[in-house]
Amino acid sequence: MFVGIDLGTSALKAVLVDDSQRVVGSHTYPLRVSSPHPGWNEQAPEDWWTGLLATMDALAHAHPREMAAVKGIGLSGQQHGAVLLGGDGNVLRPCILWNDVRAAPQCLTFEHRFPQSREICGNMAMPGFTAPKLIWVAEHEPDIFRATRHVLLPKAWLRYRMTGEMIDDMSDASGSLWLDVGARQWSDEALAATELPRSAMPELVEGTARAGTLHAGLAGRWGMASRPVLAGSAGDNAAGAVGLGAVTAGSSFLSLGTSGVLWVTTDRFRPHPQGGIHAFCHAVPGMWHQMGVTLSAASALAWWARTTGMAEQALLAELPQHIARPSPVIFLPYLSGERTPHNDGNIRGVFAGLSHGTSRADMTQAVLEGVAFSFRDVVDALADAGSTLRDADVIGGGSNSRIWVSILASVTGLSLHRLAHGEQGGAFGAARLARIAVTGEAVDAVCLPQPREETLVPDRELAASYAASLARYRALYPAIRGAMDAPVA
Image (cartoon, rainbow, N blue to C red; front, side, top):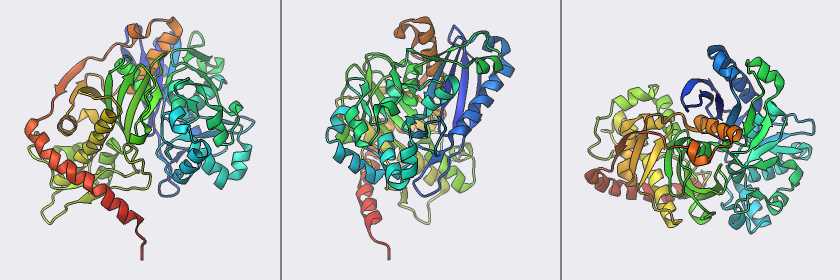
C-alpha cells in the first residue's frame, strides 16, 4: 500500500493506493488563501499541517488495515511558494504563494544581478517564482530576511515536518529560479542574486528516490506497522504527469485546475523563456518538460459563481448542450495576472461586448471561452518553442465539464481526451513515485497511461467562428494594458 498526498492551493488531498494501483480510499481537507493586499496571496504552513493530520487521521479511521500496510508516501505540492524558516526550524512568516504578484519589480532586480538566469534556469523571472519573493522580503521585511536560515517549497516543508529532513526533488526546485535546470543542481549564481547561501537550500534528489522516513510517532498515530519511506516526489504538475503516465517524450496533458497548465514531456532541456514557456526538470530521471501556464482557469468559473451567487453546475446547466456559436461577450481571464505568453502580474480581467441583451448564460460561456483562448495562446507559444501538439489528456476539476472540454478542443485545435479518473491528479502520481522509491521498479512499468473515457475533437465550423473571437480577445490585451497604465484622475 502507498499514500499520495497533494498539497494544493484550495485543498490538501490524500489517496490510499494498493499494489494493483487502485485507489481504495481518499480524503480532502479544504484550505483558504489570505489576501492582505490586492495581488498578495498567502497561506499559513501550519494550516497545511493541520490539514495533513486531519486527512491522514481520516484515512486511518476509515481504512485501518490498509494503512497498517503502507510502505511508502509520496508528496505533490503547489509550486513556487516561499516558506522561510529561522535557525530553530520555525516558520518566520506566512508562505507567499505561486499566484502572488507583489515581487514583479524584484524580477528585474534578479535578472540584472544574474544576466544568465534565463539560459541557466530555463525561465524568465516572474513574480510567482520563489527567488524574486526573497528579494522582496529582503527589501520590505529585512528583519525576517536576516533571520532566514532555510527556504523550503511547500511540499518540502511538509516533508520536513513528517521526517525532520530538508529534501526536495528536481521538478519542484525547477520552479524556484535557483536551479540549474539542465545540470539538475542548485545554481550558486542564482542563489547569490538573492543573497542566499547554498546551505539555505534543501538536499536535491530525483522524484523516484528515497528521501526520508516518516517519524515513528506519526507512523504509530496512523496505525502503520512500519515507518514508511518518503519519495523525493514532485511538484504538482510533474506529479500529475506521473499519474497520467506522461513520462515519455512528446506525451502531453492539459490541466484545468485552479490555474491552467499545458504540458509536454521532453527528453532534453529545451528552454524558450521569451515566449513565457517554462522549461523544468521532470520528476523522473533524465527527463524534462515544457509547459505554459494561465493563472486563472477553473478558478475563473469559481469566481463567476461567487459573483452571481449561483453554483457552478447551475451556471453550466444554463448553457446549451452543444455550443453552436461563440458568445457575443469576450472575457479576459486575468484575475490574478497572466503567465504565458504575457508574463504580466498586473493585468486584470475584463468583460467586453456587453449590451442590454447580454444574458447570464452569455457571460458564463464567455468565461469558459476566455480560459480556452488563454490556452490557445499557450498552444501557439509551445509551437514557437518547438513542441507542436495534436492532442492531450485533460485533468483537473474543470475536466468534469464536457461542454468546457469541447470548447477547449474547438478553440485550441487539439483533440482532448477525458479520462476515467481525471481528478486523481497529483496525489495519485505521488503514490506512484512512492511505489518506485520503495520497490525500485522501472518508471514505465509503474507509470502507465490512464484509461480514456472519451475524446472530444475540434468542431470545424465552430473553430472557424472562434478564430474571429480569438482575434478580438488578443486585441483587447494591449488596449486594457494601456488603460491600466494610465493615471487615475
